[in-house]
Image (tube, rainbow, N blue to C red; front, top):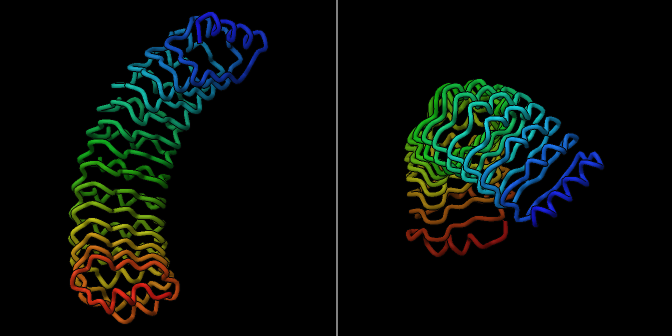
Length: 340
């Protein structure tokens, strides 16, 4: 789109007092100062363009509540962005941001902030003053740590931190008492702070592709968890306290170093999916029959030589994978394929 065509669109939208304007995928490399004429806009979509910067005039659109700048080439934000005080949703995913201006803390009505797929190495403590945030997406960045001030985001319900360089979590994270979704996949976490287990409203916790060697017994306090993802870690054992996760329906433990399971795991009576493939399991506890709602059980790539007869008592099990257990007799492998 040429600059002349863009100016015509802006002039028409201004004369019509438009409240919504989409300039998605218009191959824009810049915005003219005249953008400030759109004083009635509440929603502006500038995604999938080639913007490297924003004119300060964009910050005069004081009625904006939704601004989508995703899939551009932004390296920075103007400090004047703090003037967009009515913004509730700001999407900046898939840009080249290396930092955020401290002034971002003045977007006090912001509830959703997406910064996925940028080049952030750190967060300004000021971001933690966005006390109305409910969703914060920081996945696919280069974050090495989180500021302790993160505890101030007291209304946060979803926090996405996958694909960063996090080696640890600040204990203060436990103060995010309304958090229901926490994604920490593909980081460098070696342990979890016991305090994380104070997040009693968590329903989904994603910890795949880390370096966890153990789980704190306090994990038992996450009583509302329904999904727990622990694939591709270095777990050698599970704490017996895992049995207290009574609402758990999906448990993913693939690609760890488990040699055995605590019998207590079989008290997870609501479990429907259990993935244990690519471990070092030699046997299963007879108590497995207590997992009466189990529908999928992946035991492939282990060291099983036999199965407890009790496994046949699982009434809803329809997908049982026993492949690549070299010690398991052909009798069991053929039994695997019989209908349940």
